[in-house]
Image 1 (cartoon, rainbow, N blue to C red):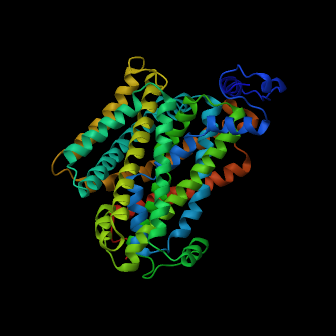
Image 2: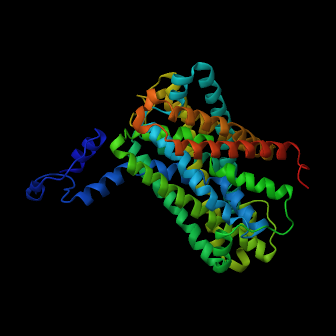
Image 3: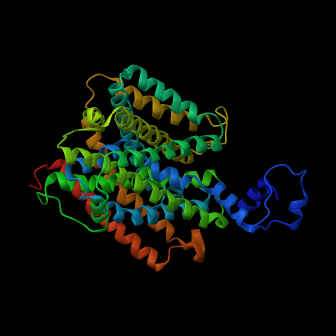
Amino acid sequence: MRLEELELESQAGLEVEAPPSAVSMPQARGIVVHHRWQMHILTFLMVFGPGLIVMNADNDAGAVSTYMQAGGQYGLHLLWILVVLLPICYFVQEMVARLGIATGKGHAAMIYERFGKWWGRFSLCDLLFVNFLTLITEFAAISLALSAMGVSPFISVPVSALGLTLLVVTGSYLRWERVVIALCLLDLTWFALAFLVHPGWANVARNTAFPTRPLGGLTSSLVFLVIAMVGTTISPWQLFFQQSCVAEKRLRFSDLKWARLDTLIGSVFTVCVAGAMMLVGNYGFQHGIVFQDPAQFAGAIMPPLGHFVRNGILLLMVNAAVLGTTAISLASAWAYGEVKGWQHSLHRKLWEAPGFYATYIVCVCAAATVVLIPHVPLQLVIISVQVFAGLILPSAIIFLQLLLNDRELLGDRWVNKPWNNTINWTIIIVLFALSLLLAAQVMLPTLFK
């Protein structure tokens, strides 16, 4: 059985088995499947992608700054939070994948269809606004990191915007996905950097397994960082992105178990990378290095650790921003294209889906332009992103939860089970409380002494 035939039958929801005659078909073109385990591996490789990309792209430039700052200010004391966040990441995104497979439509389209235009416009406008502000912070990070390497922002930012545009407008989803997965795997370099800073692995294991209280107790800085870690691990755009991505790949219910595995791998990989970022930041805590952003930290540690670590941090910061930019821009373009009824697929050529590609290009270029404007209050933009994203996240997940309990839409087999609802409503309540705390902390900085 050829790979092309396997893909067609998998997408049709059929269980396929390689025929014995496959061995005697040397003239067949493509990959020949001899055993069921080979079929499973090939099916997984065809399904693989959205879960890893959506999770790892959320380790964007803001996440790099947040996790490194957590390590720099509190050492290893906050590592255990990542363990708690792991199942939350998985359960939220598993619902998204299941809904995308069940409907074959994106998240924005489903909200419009099931809740009406008013709620649809509310969710879409919130998404587009927060996504645009986030894109500004991504380009700001590119400018900051490459400026530290001697590259002018008037070169780095336009070139990055051009590269991000060319990445998407090729008319091939598979080509885009392969490039982005390769960028995701570059984050393995964080593990090498973590080993090079010698964090003390016994302390790493202890602080990962058991919650510990940092010196100084409950402070405004600690509350802000904890909430920021939660907010940067789960973002509203992720819900829209993965569902559209699953629909783009035309996955079927026979692919659901592989989509779940993809999401689990993405969750574990992303949390481990976040932990490595904290270990690198912990070097500053151990050696009394105070820093405001990763670029400043990279410059401070170059004398003792060398150019590899310094340049590695800066380039990984750029990589994180590129991943975040392409995923967030696509989330906006997919959502807006769905609502407008345009062709909105990476399988389409530029002239076949002009509105979809135009939305992506406008998002990228406008955000890049804002960063190049002198005296733009980028810090205010960053704070605004945190507040707005925190405020709309609970409402976005509530829409998702209600859709996953719609029996008319999903049927009895794929609708949420009671244990799903218990876990998901608990997550929603916790996120809602944390989003309120985040908003209060930003607007009232002296709330926690």
